[in-house]
Length: 364
Image (cartoon, rainbow, N blue to C red; front, side, top):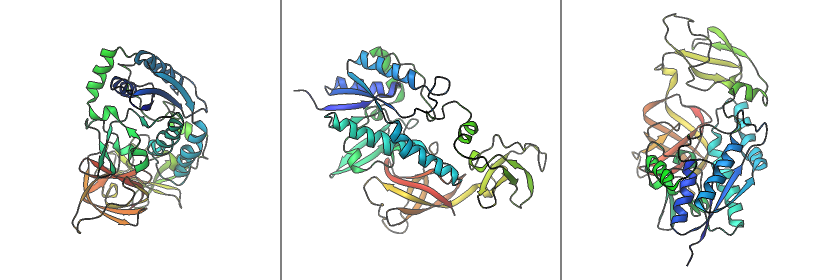
């Protein structure tokens, strides 16, 4: 008796192709689906959509599964890109991949898959789902260097109950080996980075097409003007490159870092040295929280600690969580965190279990 139908999001990369292959080998009725999420200036110079589609179709052919493409560009523009622009306008640095997962890959895509008669969807993310007592947990992928649970922390119970992550159970090196043995055409394809609508194009050039450029003063912590910035939206907390003030102030070669944005004055504050106190924060506030279980985690006494990340490529930092309802929370870290950035996600963990998180609104 055939197993149930699963629709796999085929991106053109090796991870999603191997996910489809593993499910096919397990006896599932697998359909591959390619999502087109961006149409503006979609050309080969900056955006690899066309080649990704060809690679996804070729992989589906080798695996021996049906394949189709669906266009979610309108949904992406409304639900993800509009928010991306709003955040940059507000002086924050958003993470569109987090929103894309919650609104497109596990909402629009899931709805489409269910319409095709599927009971579940699968993607090539390095994460795991575990059911415990009727509740679905989001766990880190077993390969710590590839774990992507950070980007999936906004998924809810309904979404996780219908999602599988086949490569989350294995190492990236094994994924490559499986793909090579199966003769998948994208077995050695380089992993994609970034988001398609920016691609490899200069970031400032891209943003300037959608948001007005507002140059202003670049100042030190004591208010001394030492240069001009091109617009606050082009900079992020902790940024070192592209400031144009290399030898200013002391002349000793100590690098400058972005420490703060002042929207009211349109000023960019910069400091010298990676360890400057203005780059370190022991507390933060986050809003627009989303919890995997549907509610904020309960503290087991005043001294309970969790682990948290304030950016993807970061080790968990021990912290105390204080939730105010289910939509806002504060974190107090045992050790001050470097370059906490409004607009990025603060994601909470209890061991390997990702509990959810929120958007950093303020450094405290």
